Length: 380
Image (cartoon, rainbow, N blue to C red; front, side):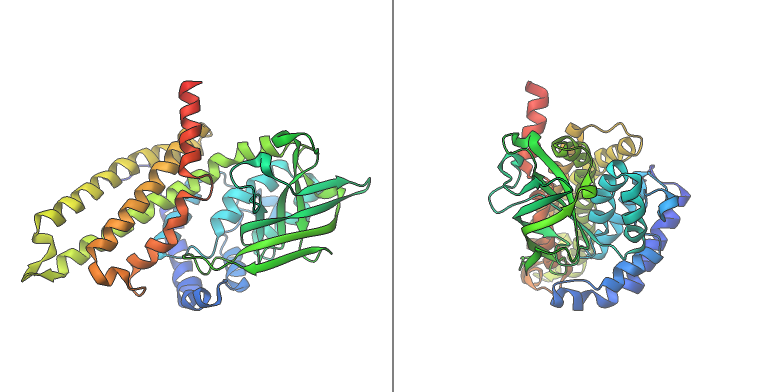
């Protein structure tokens, strides 16, 4: 089906993204995978190309465009290229809104130009060894010491954790406040007591640095409180819909790409003297996946437009996230099976997509959490 949501401007942007990937990412990606981290030069190149801070006001060096369709294009093309390690979506769509929506004028002047230029790489630190989806379990504390905060605690599974120059930390500022006693504290590279642990060894997305972070009596200026004191829970809930949409967009793009390469493969691969595509079972497998992708694409495109217009709610973002990522997982598994033994070889894109995509149903809120959000909305 012909997609109807993009204009000529979006198409031109898509070509620019493809050119960037071909020139600045794909020639280096294999080495980044071996290194477990991408080059900082790639971030600077993305800044020069105008791929960072798409929605940041122009006065701070950004694109000044809040149309989420541009972010969708970026997510789709990076997914098709298999280049999850350069986490522009995390930077732009997850952390960017906190800085632009909650930052003071002074904070914006201090951080956003570097954010848009690639000199400042960002991360957000929520997850802890004993607290994932349950924000009430967060133990990291920020004590008010008058003119500064003292931060103590640890975080884990932090994307961009090694490279990050600016980390938005979710910390407890009111000890007995539960989820409503949390605040966002920004910690900058080089702050005494802020240490990074190991670059975690994952089964996929090898070039995406994912780290443990430790805060030992870290003195943070009062001016680094982002948003309202004890307001982190509301701030996080407000921005989670966009995070989940970004993950969902990547999910359907991955499923479509896997279907595309597998359809080509079964036409060429022979078994019992004829192409696999001549077997009814194979045709049924392709037919089922194609139909599921088409239906999901129609829903996701509607969600993309609604989000661009500011009308998408948390429930439909949750629907998009769990459905698209679970579809991605199913399609990756079925496509690998259709590739046979070759599908298990890392030189084949289907193998890499299988391992890279497995995290999709987990981060940004697990499938189970998404169902809980949807169920509560219907049965409250």
